Length: 121
Image (cartoon, rainbow, N blue to C red; front, side, top):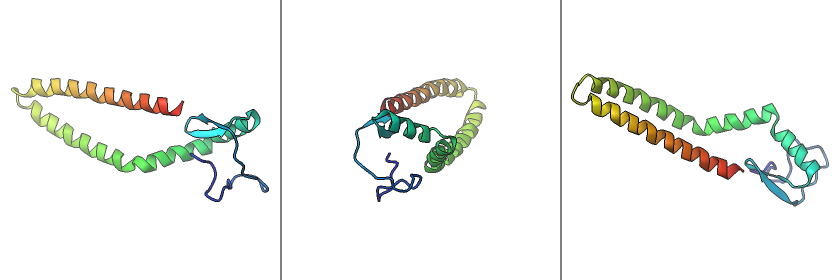
C-alpha cells in the first residue's frame, strides 16, 4: 500500500515535501523507508490510533456484505439444525457432521491467518 496519492504527494505531509524514490523494506502491509529516521516517522504515523481505526473501518467496509451473508447463513443453518435434531434417526449424523464441519472451518481460518501472517512479515 502506498501512502502517497496518485500525484505523489501525501495530503498529511508538510508543505515543500518532495517525493523521491528511496530504498524501502516491507513492514506489515506497507513499504517503509529503510533509513532509520524516516522509518521511525512513518511507523509512528501508521501506528497512531486514528490511522489504525481508518484502516480497520476500511477493512470492515470492504467485507460488510460477507459478514451479512455469514449472519444470514448461520441463522438458516441454526433453524435447520434444530429441525434435524427433532428426528432421532438423523440427530447423531447431524451432531457428528457439525463436529467435522467445525474442525474443517477452524482449520480453514487457521490456514487463512497463517497466509496473512506470511504475507505481512
